[in-house]
Image (cartoon, rainbow, N blue to C red):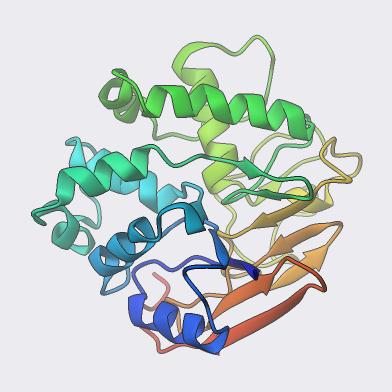
Length: 272
């Protein structure tokens, strides 16, 4: 059995198929992890979502910010980029797909690796991160979903405290798991900075480089940060290599000796 993690697809369904051919994916034996952002911006979000869902227990997919955006749009919130999602919203199996999506985790963990979409603040060890993920997952899967989606967007609060509660607490957790790239040494989130390391103000660090972060020692696979490209540093592996922007779609083999297999992709969207 082979075990691969695959970076952000964002509707690039045919590139995914080519990559799976390249790694000789066997749906009866192999296991795929997806870093989230299955949908939005690319041309075949519906096909990508249907395909990954159909893989059943051969796949683990965490939620990304674009996946949450789809849920928000479907529940009447924030119609930015709605046209990219119309194929899903108008599909006959829309409700089944959306229900599957909202039952995906924010974080998945096995005996060696942790899978997330974006990042972890330095105040959280891996057990704390898992507990925080479960708090939000309970809301997404329950009767308060629509109420939460109304207040999910926003950059505040930007600093973790155990005293955080209610929607503010849940918004901070979601922002870490689905939007985080940079923060300062104290863990204050800097969500407006999206470029590659070196482009940020000197007081900010990529989340996986913050000195003394409490999740250090855990191997973490993540996506979200296409400007970063592939990175393997401090036990963290960034595998969003910018397929939608004309970069690559990457698969990282996790069983046995780790190695990456990538596929060059056409440019579907230009930044901005």
